[in-house]
Image (cartoon, rainbow, N blue to C red; front, side, top):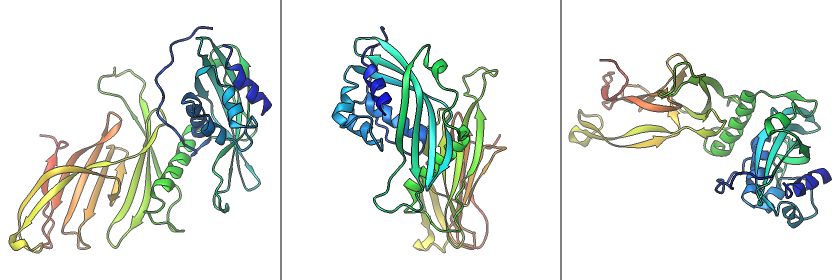
Amino acid sequence: MRRLLLAAAALCGLAAGPAPAAEPPYLDDRSGPEALIRSLYNAINRKEYARAYGYFSTPPAETWEAFAEGFSQTESVALTTGQPSMDAAAGGIHYHLPVALLARHSDGSEAVFAGCYTLRLANPRVQGAPFEPLHIEEGRLAPADGPPQEALPARCGEGQVQDAEALLAEKAKARFAALYGDSCLAGPDVPEEPERHTIAFNHPHEDPQTPPHEVHLFRFFCDAAAYNTMHVYFLADEFGKLLPLRFAVPELAIRYENGDAEGRVEELRIVGYTAEDVLLNSRFDPQTLEITTLAKWRGLGDAFSAGVWLFRAGTFTLVKYEVDASYDGEINPELLLDYHSGP
């Protein structure tokens, strides 16, 4: 811990660099080792030293004020991370994360530090209250020569190295639990692992020879009713930023003969658009890159809405939507929107 404090203090004596950037947006994410260390340096770059201090189980200074003093002349810190490794400990998991820092001082000087962070997460299933989230146990950093990418340690710790996709999956599960733990069904019959897909693509403006970008799609079971199954989706962009997907959906105005839903449909039109994050009876086709849904309005399935969202240029776009609003025992949908079918 003393080494980390000395390294932090050493950030204050650093040769000329670029002007400081605007304050970064707030980030407080404990869903994985890289996310937590990024949150640590987000707090340092935002001068929120009490928050940074709180990420440690045993902080590298006696008080957060002393911790902050070590950064009194630091303008910003740019973080580079490597692949974490992990090993099981008694009642939890230890993570070991390689890091390299480019520290910029307020006088324009800069220096590079490199080393390893050790983090620990006690088994969430057996913890009581108060809950202890993923935290930093130790950081060992030292001055390094060369740019951060060259100074970055090849690995830290002796545990199993996690690949980037596995880390994203863990992050997706944590985010799903945080956002949908109260609204989606929980229990032994719920799959813990999401359905996962890697999608390679190029932007329309790019040269065809450009190496493809990659995003990762995660599909989570949420709940089930008598005739509809519900799923939510998360998408990690090419930079690893993970967000829940929300899907454009038409808002409908339906008028039935004599005001009776069992009667003939006299009018069906789109009056606007909204967004939904839970899709009914949906699936992703990795061949066509489409998410399709068929939301039954009753068990018979003669009244329903169906949509197609196509992946292109890094996200999903609504390209087709049809509705059968008549409860007449027949399948006769009306096409309301179609940017997908050929001429």
